[in-house]
Amino acid sequence: MTDVIRAVSGDELPEVTVSLTDEATGVATDLSAVDTTIAVKFHLAGSTTVLSTITCTKVGDGTTGQFTFDFTGGVLTSLAAGAYEGDILITYGSDIQTVFDTLRFRIRAAVA
Image (cartoon, rainbow, N blue to C red; front, side, top):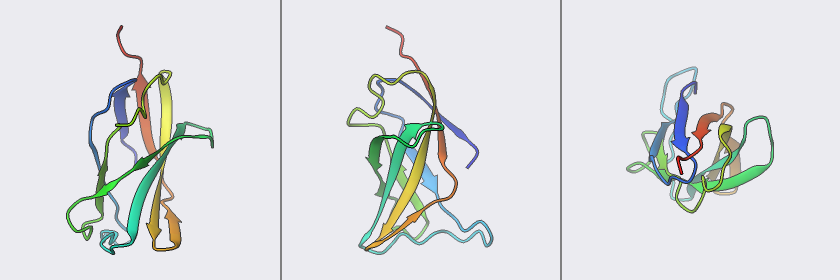
């Protein structure tokens, strides 16, 4: 996950789509089980303090390994410009898997 997602402080969009695949095989991560949920723990780059937990939505039935999220609910409100990261957490029933690579974000200040 090398791309940087760019957004502006205070915005609620864009809607971001992420595709999860097995690095070794290229096979999509199956997210189709009814009790599978996905969240992104949003934090300042280099910090472990979670600023927001973003609830994600599976694309289709989840078999493609894709999910979407946006920044509604004030995720980007009043953020300082800078680099941020997002840890992807997949919950399969009672089991949690944290995706090794993080999402990277670059936030710039809004023009007043």
